[in-house]
Image 1 (cartoon, rainbow, N blue to C red):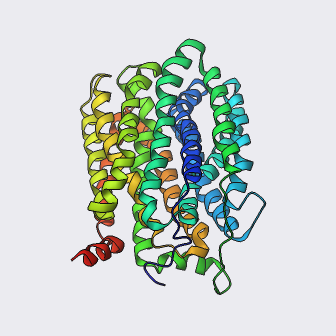
Image 2: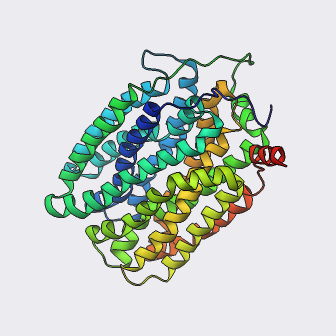
Length: 414
């Protein structure tokens, strides 16, 4: 298998398509942030055992292991009037909206479990759409810019949720009002735009019959994809040890409330919002992607070190600064980089397989995180030690993957 297979398209993306990507990921990440920062507190109101919180939060990555690979594989082989990837987004988005509306009213654990289960399953389907859509619809030389634009929209959505949603709507009108608002965002900004993505059928290549063995060999025998899949595992451990429990670290260990958290933590989204497109353009031209990803992880590790010594809610500004800077560098770069190594006819399959690594990492650390906090007597700060270790492993592994397209361009200029 060639390290750099032919892309699906070499055409420049239209302004319409870029706008659709922007508004869709505004809506997707509004609700991703709502899930990350509101869901732990909603669960805590029903049951404050950190182990139970960890188990319920682990439903998100658990379905990432199941739903994203399945949908990725199916979407490679179906065609509908609205496309192939868009079809699943259009089905999942209304389910997410219904779950958001019902969650705050759940009075007992089993009710909340069912709602969280359906929410996370559909949320994983929608969240996993960006990588195959970028690979399907965007030529390689425009992917860094497009992913930067997606990150620009996603951070604007996260900023809006944190500062307006948690900082104003929750403070004045309560949790239910924010969840209702999030449901409306899911319909208007995610489901409806998905009808207009304009997907095209992809030429099928002659391949042997797909088996379980070949499913994994397609990724494992491709050295860059294998190494980047392991990097995705380390990303999962790093990201979720922070994000899944950050709101509880702030409220329990720093003694702040949800409104104070939202008004400070939104800074990391502002930084990512401002830097996303310039960083994407700069890295595409000036820095090998494996180096850029490692630099991003280094910034996020510094954020964890600051968190270990934080003793005041205002320290969250500094944590947000380093985490936001690292986040935008790492996340703008990773998906365009990994998409360069994917054969065009099995992008959904390979994306799903890669997401298994992320889902396994998220599931393990989310469940383990709850137990670690339980053993630590309710101290959420201890999780940052484990996050630092995962970040360092990610740097070591990422540096082993060569940015071949960057090397080719550099050689042409000499």
